[in-house]
Length: 88
Image (tube, rainbow, N blue to C red; front, side, top):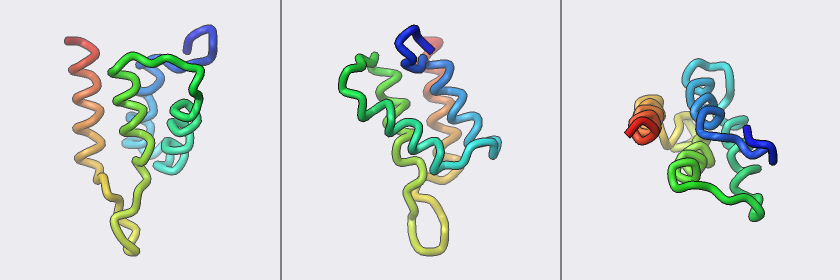
């Protein structure tokens, strides 16, 4: 996290990991990302903005049966892509 309190890529990545590990609910991850996206005073690089956008909406329901629009495999793919884009 920066001096301004703005999370860095490591903290954003940790939210994906926590969701996949079951330490953070999808709703909590969504609300956390929404807080940062709504702050118009912050400036984000493209990768951080992309990752926050994935977290915001991670809890969208696919139907009344409790399944999510974005399944675990897709969340894992997002995490993998984030890590690749960070290193590359």
